[in-house]
Amino acid sequence: MGFRAWLYLNRAGDCTMTSILKVSEIQDPTNSNTALTIDASGNAKIPGSVVQVLRSKGTNSRYTVSSSSWIEPDTNMYVNITPKFSSSILIAQLQGHVQIANTSFGGLIPTVTVGATTVSMIEEQNASGGSADPFAGGSTGMNEMFRDTSTGNQWWTFNLSGLYQCTSTAQHTVKMYGRVGGGALTVGDSGPAIQLIVYEIAQ
Image 1 (tube, helix red, strand yellow):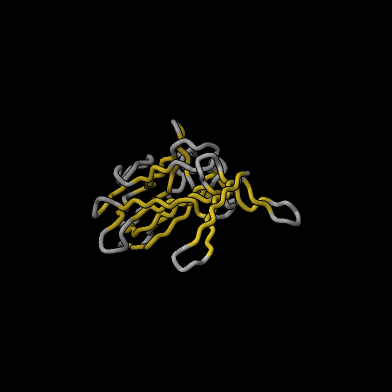
Image 2 (cartoon, helix red, strand yellow; image 1 turned 90 degrees about the vertical axis):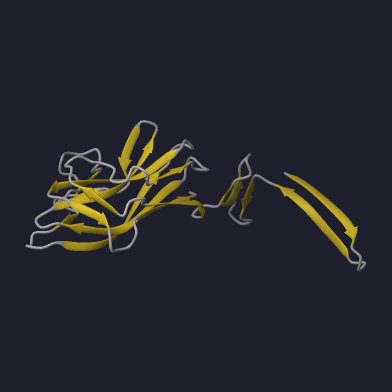
């Protein structure tokens, strides 16, 4: 720990002191629990606090998804985020508006890519109560998130939240993927603009 201080008089004759306090960790006085740490780059880590927030907006007025395989409806909408701390979690919010055509069904997910590995930031729950990564799963993963079984089209506003536990400070790329089990779904047009917001939360 380092400490430097300067004492001087201002024009009014008052005594003023400025100082620099150099610490790597602050603990509570009773149980020595860590309240804050500071790394060599000057990044302050407070567990549970928001470290950084990044946002990307959709670039097309409408996106049509008609593939049974996972695709990126808008390859220009993504967030590149480099975590300040390897133990942080990333929370992604995917917001927008979707229209399902008659008898169509499909889904959208936020994903994160680190290196050559891409995973979904949300899990799919099955009828037996289990859950799994729909991006890495079988051909029907998450394809009934939105479904229309009537004789007309239906519209939904959606707000999906996904979570990812970081293990490194390498660049993480968050994107939107979509797929259908039948028919087609359209994202955007006459509803809330689609956007992707990513938060880094210190742990």
